[in-house]
Length: 310
Length: 310
Image (tube, rainbow over all chains, first blue to last red):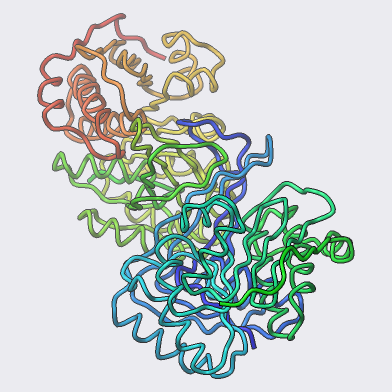
């Protein structure tokens, strides 16, 4: 089973408007909502791929109830842990004029220490049945800064593989616990290491503890440094659209591949194809099956270095 | 008692961000919420003035519960009628950079006919104790287009005075029921009558059934046509800020004045002073007591015509 963790889960609300006018008043023609947060988006993709998946994290209040109803509607196994605060929302405003999206992310509730203790207790039970654990997204206020490090260590204790998709202090504080894979994007890698060369930055993250680094290079594909070698994987052509969805689809492909014991070159081919297939979809967690089928046979994967060990 | 009616009540959410970047992703540094909708804002002002007030309208779902908790927190008498849909939200994004606000108004739930019947039944009870009824804002989808006309007739049947602050078809469909006062702003008056001269437009609304018209002219004050005469009321100086709050404060002053039996020139002086005092406040329903005190003795009220009758 693949356990996805979303500590800062959200109810993702989408507002359709005619056109965005800064400092104007807008009539929302349609409002829709669904369960969101990066780990939940990963679980949606995994579920569509037929991989056995469960969703955990924290949820509270009436927004948390709406979020859990959304998981149930999507047929996702809901192992969210209740907390006292109100789950956050994100609001994405989509202009009919140009299809572009403007996003507002609420910070999330201040989580009480008792909720974190409840979560860790439940996670320790769930991880016993997990072969792969996906840790995605920001930490809500109140959680210890090494929250992901604690979860990586608990996972390693039961032999589970960990994939971490986080940024800034949450990423840096987790590296010492030696996550199996970290998946920063170009901006996150510069922020975390101060280097803009993906190869040098990936090596820096490996020196800090990551066993493998899959650095997403946006429309140019992936740069992966693993104990088994270094690869570059690139799509046959560029697509433009929703980068959040592409990152979550990439993580889902890595999780599904590690769960199935697939070799890295094939994992990277799938990851680039699924990322590309997510780009045309406005909602993170969705992908275009036609693009996926077309890209998975045409993605190029090139070994750039022999295996490295440290 | 002054009964304020908000059929499309909302939970007003405010997001503080650094600066609005169209098509960007924004971290919300603070999110706050309170009960809103134009009639509820009017009730807040009335309550601060010490006038006896009750709030009615429709509320449903978890957003409706949050809205009712907000009324209770503000010490407002809650006579909202439950409905099955989920009450709407409005989201106001305030940039720290320039203090400017960008507003997104959800349309509101589709109201079932049974909820409207429940509302009318409760309204008919409440209006027996009301000397003044304030009908404010848009109609949610599903309500009959003559909803305000029905409420104006029920109010007239018990001898209550009615003040209608609505726009477009909701305003036009109510005029035949002869509301005591309508309070359009400059844009609404042009939309409803096709005339941009306030005097000519006010006469057109009176011909359609309004007994009195108080047309707000933004920072220039008010133009009022009543059975007792025609007046122009102007503030001593212009203020810039929140026009929604100014309109609701204006309606509150008219309601308080009609409730107390105050003559029109004094009502208009109060209305201009309260509107001006609302302008510096970012949230509708609030006003600056210092500006109010200063303006209520310096607003000019000038009679422009002798009484007209038709």
